[in-house]
Image (tube, rainbow, N blue to C red; front, side):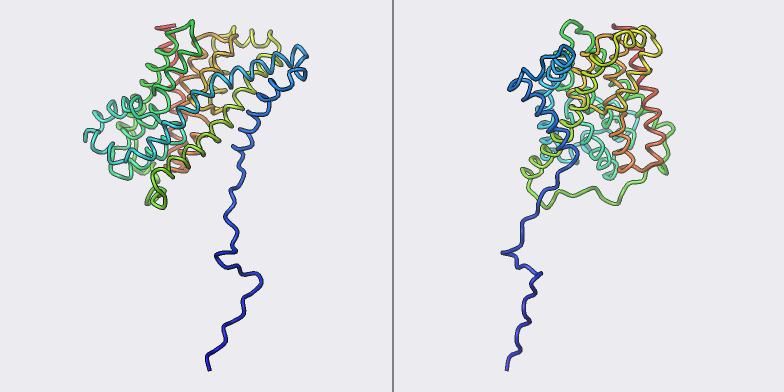
Length: 338
């Protein structure tokens, strides 16, 4: 006699009956939803925004988001394409072996191979794991989200009457990347870097799947932070008394400190932050340049990503140093050009 097969348990499902995996709703999805609702209501039910203050608030919020959205979409798609189709070995072949020479090459590569802040950190980690000098990888990490063509064009569009703002942002951001790369080459210690044994793998999917997944993740993530930036800009322009903003903006030191802190806290995607800065008209061009230079190289999101990729010992040293260098470069370039 053949043994009887054990009965199937009620709580065990076969492959045909198993429910497909469900995608969890993240905070980025919720924040991005907040972007769509006010924009839709602004056009569908304009009567809801009849109050003077509310009308002004909604106008600023919608204007900031709608102006930034095309650049955000294009930047996310371009970054996803680089993540999916440009192999890390490309950087290994393109970078010189001498670290001090590799730093400016890697910094300039940020203009050719752009990436958002979320993508630049894991790319830099992958480069270090593959033997690229950390100083060069860090220069690319800082330059890619700050000087790429999407960011430059977005800055030109956001400041149509101030053409030197885009040039100043490009020069100051590139200087930050080069200085931090050379500083790491001179003073950085290997013990400060704690890298995992290997980078996250995408071998389980095709390049097309990697492109789509990366674009979806970055779009929801960056869109959420765009909402936060638009809400902040609208609130500062409407809720905060004009006299307070004039007082802050009238003080050279306070305006610089406030704009630097806003850049760190808001963590707006670099493809969209120019439109937020342009809406803060009470502040000087130099203080707004500080906002644009600091944001893509050091903010709360980047600090968390750097801690997870390179370790806490790295982040607690690199982030404060980058903040000081970024503010200094922005002030120097702003004094010279603006």
